[in-house]
Image (cartoon, rainbow, N blue to C red; front, side):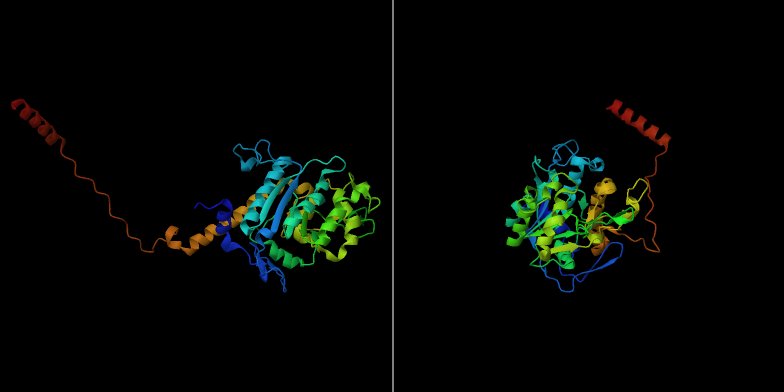
Length: 360
């Protein structure tokens, strides 16, 4: 029987996948990253994990992924449906490599609040069917496709009792002070990556988050219906204080920003005096000025794996495609042509043929 796309992808990259309990990961640059010394997640979770892209934008326009016309990857746009197309390509590929479920959830526009508020109600809807639901923003990419989520969970300290994990946001400084803190002075979190684990506690938290702007539980939350940063602000102003014991904060360096983040964010025209240098080691979140890099980042992640697969294939059977010329390589036999007849003899033969024909 013909293999499905998922089976083909899983098989193709099987030899490159990092073990969930691996003690370390060495990236293509040679940088060494420690794994957990006491891993909780030692086996692949497979279909117990859902990776979901939640968006009110639909990539059905010209040269976008869900348009039936032939797509031109080189010229996929960097905004709107183009950005969503790029995120689906990266996140779906990652899910297939590791056997996770994947979904593009096209959410409806919200009438009474900003569209980013779709996050808590969609996760609440989906989570009962899975052990983990992992949400990535459209501008968040997985750079090292061979690293499973389980290995990251172990490194980040996500355990059976964890409800939600999300990264610390970058810290911005203006006029000599930080602007990346909530009303109580605690540094804010970023919802560009949300890892939710199924439990009664998590479902209750998601319901409280979803209903926050109604102010039935959290007075003042309606302020964040449309004011920046919407559902993200509501989470760190209210929810994290009620559920702090089960929330894991992921290091900013590992799940926000991209290589060269600080330098680019402080380029001429920046409003910031300074900003923390988060480089997105395991999840690259191309916020603000980084958005034009999303397509290229996705392409690099795939080409890195393809290059390694081809390299391994060649080196495992080098004689098939790799020929080494010997030091003393004799020349092949020279080409020899049949000796040409003398033209005068050829003419005589032709005349003789005519004479024979006439006599006959």
